[in-house]
Image 1: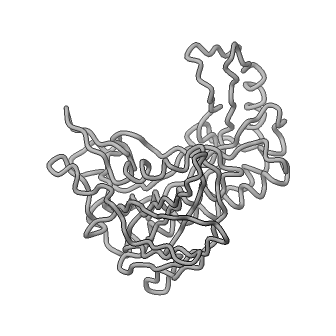
Image 2 (image 1 turned 30 degrees about the horizontal axis):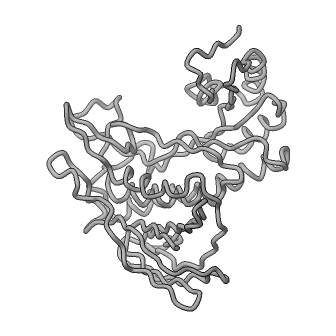
Image 3 (image 1 turned 60 degrees about the vertical axis):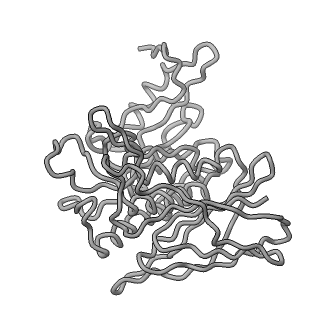
Length: 335
C-alpha cells in the first residue's frame, strides 16, 4: 500500500495509542507493524513525510525502549508520548468548583511531565545520542468531569486559572527540553478537554490557556537560554512541589524573554536572577492572573481573564528581581 499525500501534510502519526484503544498491542508487535507501514510511506514532490511512532502512555518506559531498539532510525522521525493531568480516572473532579486539595493534585500530575520527558529522553539518548529522533508529546493537558448537562462523550469542560498555570508549567518543561522535545500538542483545541477556544452557537471565547499560549509564542523560533533557579516549595499537608518553573530564550532581534509560572495557591514568589554579564537597559512584561483559582471566562463575561501589563520586575547591577503573584503566569522581555 502506497500512502498518497494529496494535502501535502508533513506530519504523519502511524497509529494512535497502539498500547490501548489503538489496538491493545505489545510494543514489539507495534514496532513490526510500524516498520511495515513506514516502508511504503514515501515522500513526494517537495514535501518530506515526517513519521511519528505511536509512543508510550505516561511512564511506560519499556515502550520507548522497544521502539528505539527495534525500529531503524532511518524509518523513524519521532516517538510520541501521552500524559494527562488527571486527579483520578474514576472521579476526575469538577472543572470550576475544585478545592485546593484537588488543585494541588492536578499540579502534581502536571509536574510529572518533567520526570517523564527526562526519562523517556534518556532512553532515546542511549539509542540515538545525536538526537536525530524527536520526542513528540502529542497529547497533554488537564482532564476533568464534563460540564453538567453536556454530552459526556464530547468531553466539554471549562477552563480556569488552574489550567493557565498548568499550561505555563508544562510549556516551561517542554522548552527546557527542546533538544529532544520538538513538538507538543495540547488536547484539544476547541470545546474538548483543555481547549483554547470554547464556542456556543455563534459565540466564541478565549480561555486562560489560550492566553498563556499567546504569551509564550515569543519563544518560537528563538534560541533557548539555560536558566536554573532555586525556588520555594508549595506545600499542602505532607506534599510539596516547586512553586516556580521558568524558561528563557533569545530571539533574532536580540530580545531575551523569560517566562515564569507560580503555581502556589496563596503566596507570591520573589526571585533574583543573575544575568551573568548580560547587559539589558529595560524590562517589561505581561501577567495572567485572577482573583481566584476557579475564575474563568464565560460567554457573559468573555474577558474576565486576560493578560495585563506587569511591572513587578526590576533590573539592577546585572540582576533581575521579579515578584510573581500567586497562581500566575508572567512573561518578561529584556532589551
